[in-house]
Length: 363
Image 1 (spheres, rainbow, N blue to C red):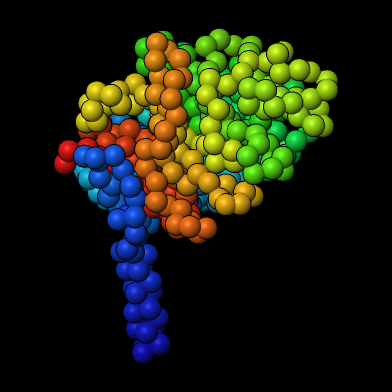
Image 2: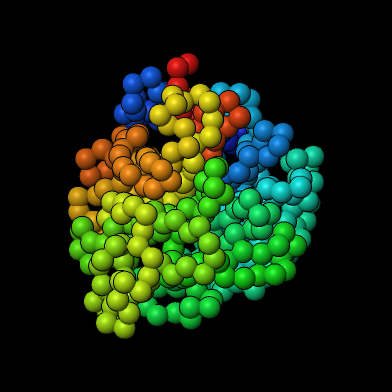
């Protein structure tokens, strides 16, 4: 009995420590009037996010679990494990009461999920035709204004010339998994995209290749207003960086240049157009980007939220919005995705800290 009691006390202590950690949010620098607070600190490996109609937040990971987080206003409520033992279920999307989850090689659907958080249903396999390589195999998914589910497939390498019909592209399909078609190609690895709220045109981030030096090539913010566009990989990076291995086969003039060159190796991931009313008017319909941070650059860069301002539908300026997860050469957090809440606040996931933050204005 004493041994069982001791084990219970230790388990309780671990649980309390996991749910009540103090993260150094005072180190995060934001523009005047904004503040950041802890929304949830017990979502290990938190990556892509999607909001359900009832306010529940669904969170994918690059581990094996998918979570649901109850919304309690400015702070999260209970956290539920929706699924586990999955293959890098990074992407989540929501439609008609169902949660869609992207594993490396397939898309799953969990029906009537809001009423089943404590007893999740068995998933339905929507489409299992995607490649199984784990290099750039994790997927961000989202439903577009056309009602189709957009699914990227990254290059299975740092730099190579993969089958252009199968890799380094963005695909889309009907909610039931049929009608899979390629929307954009020459895309090394996108882990975030959104649609302009005025034009319904697709914008997406793309990670540049490695091992060309500290400052080359840039990451990219791309604009794909129509299907069939080519964004250059593996022949061209950024606006004019010809690849030393493959650039001789196709020039940069043969592909669409990025709408904005981002920082080199910043690992630009989740992005969102801001459509809320909480932030000042100058932020309305502008693009927020989560930069996960470099892993092979010295000194490191990224680990922040940046803002791309648009003018007349074109990317005009790139600036830092929130920073402080990187302190010197050490990062205590890594932003991954951005989700707008009904009140206009922004949530930011952090897979290193296992946390989700809330950024608000004027509160």
